[in-house]
Length: 402
Ligand code: PMP
Image 1 (tube, rainbow, N blue to C red):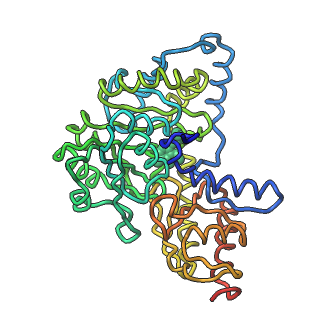
Image 2: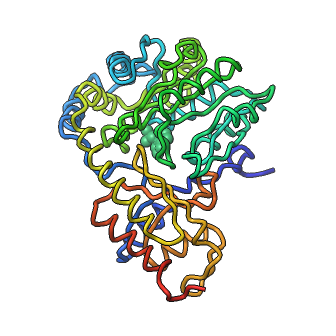
Image 3: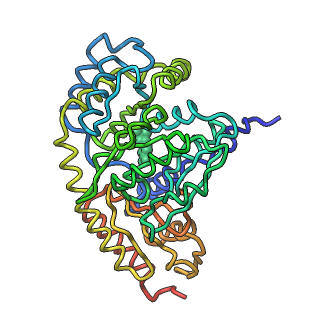
């Protein structure tokens, strides 16, 4: 008999966290590593949020169990925030507070998938989605996109992927890892396609406030109100308020599905830590000034990294439209040797670049799209310039190139 269940043995560890861990270990051993691996803002959580958490620690109300599905004040803050930010109107009974957006993703698939149900998953995809789908018994149907299509799926591709077993479409915009943002008309077309074909949508809105220039965030059930009965929204405070470590997210959906998910949560985790929920309430009620400052910094860095990466021969990078990731096409760098090591795949290239240039990025394999790489630009301008210049020196120099 296996010591570990088949279900858990089939899970691959998070590749993005693995790259980050390797880079941090190298750094700890004294190497000067530039890490493009991390998927988190490099800003501190705003002071008023931290102060709310400090006050919450001292309040005995927060020392006890609270409702498994979330504090009533937290649900009310989510309802108000959602209407303010995306225009989607809902009731507190439609909200489940989770341990981060990641837990909301996991719960959403657990709530919708029966064994064998197919989930359409556009690639490149965030590494957690296929694992969460598989754990729920679902089967990912992956649709490839590329740099030429701006990493966006088309209705024709959705039609081709549709079968009798299709239950859910996973949609995310702004996107991790590609940084692409679907225009409102594109969001509407995909939402209408889902309604026409009786497909549920899980829409991940965690990067809603990180949209640059003329690009615009839009929420699918707002664009297509008929979808609301078959749509789960995933969101959280991590990216908007620089709160990745606080672990607060949520899911919004039809009350029957949310009730089932809340029962599941009542056995799995109970309530999200009360102090963290109080901090999240302060974040949601505290306005959007801090995220505007972060967005300005990310927008500037997007322009910088886009230009620097495109300057490297063999690299083609689309300009990031949102989130904090650039996702260059690195296929032009493959099939060569660097310092005696051959890179046939981006997995190998990422290893070589980390070993030889001390620069960490996450290979496209982690996102279901080999040949590309994800460079988070949630790091300082000087580090971005230094990191890309090291990469350029390694792959663009004459040394070791064959
Ligand atoms: N969705 C996407 C697309 C993400 O990139 C992330 C974080 N990497 C999450 C959800 C989850 O964020 P968290 O669990 O930190 O709230």
